[in-house]
Length: 358
Image 1 (cartoon, rainbow, N blue to C red):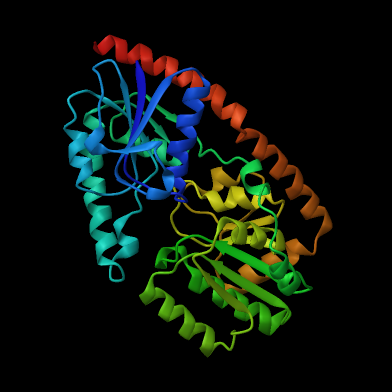
Image 2 (cartoon, rainbow, N blue to C red):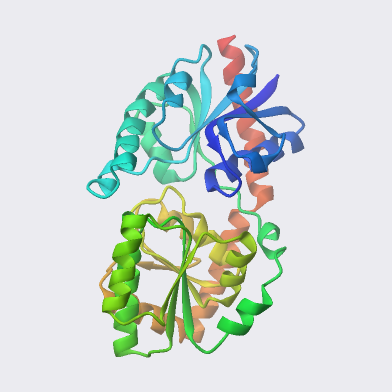
């Protein structure tokens, strides 16, 4: 029996891709034979991942599909002759792309429709959060489990900080970091508005770092906003950066900020915990459960509330100590060992369910 994981696309730094690859390592650590396939494979991944042209599976093999969005490949999965296991990373509701990204809007609509078909061909499913697991349960899946994203601290700490960046930005300016793809529902514009309020009403020693690629049309809007608010010295657009650059920003920053309106898990929150930074996040979808007691949830996204909350927390030693304890607790809950133990038990249940089908 082999455990085979498949995906529409696998890339080097995508969170869903990393989860699939990390799970493959865990399965092998548990003593199982494994294989990884994808419809589209990033050449940087080497020979470990194969394209679907080479796909082979026997009847007794366990096939796990990682679902992220709507694709033509989903139709292949829905019609696969054996029932599968699914890992659901969540599909962003299409309304967040309406009017600003029609391609993504259609993919999400398509994905939600295809999810219902795939569920009918699924006998067990993991989800990245309880929020996502409940969605699968509501669709009628009987056997579902939450299995958090694997985030290993040592894979971040291994990167040495870039000296030139430290020399330039490790100063007395309060720095906030937002990480991820720049699309409208991530609400980078609301973060810029909060920085403007902070600068005008609290201190001009404030910096916002927007790390990651930004959708061009949205980026144009953000740059115009920065110019109008005279924040050219306060907002940094990094564009696509290396892991070493990203980890250097995590070391420099005072706080990690997320104002996104939809998250199936939100890895940057955990990355902020790893670097022992204060995390501030809008309390939407899976964010409260991902953050736990390790950060500050934001319920009122007015610029004044965001700015004053960040300022007050960063200047409150008792609150910072409380958050430090929360981070330690949450990282223990998300530790590799705990997830490996869960995977060990879950895969035994999956094998038993699979044997009943044969």
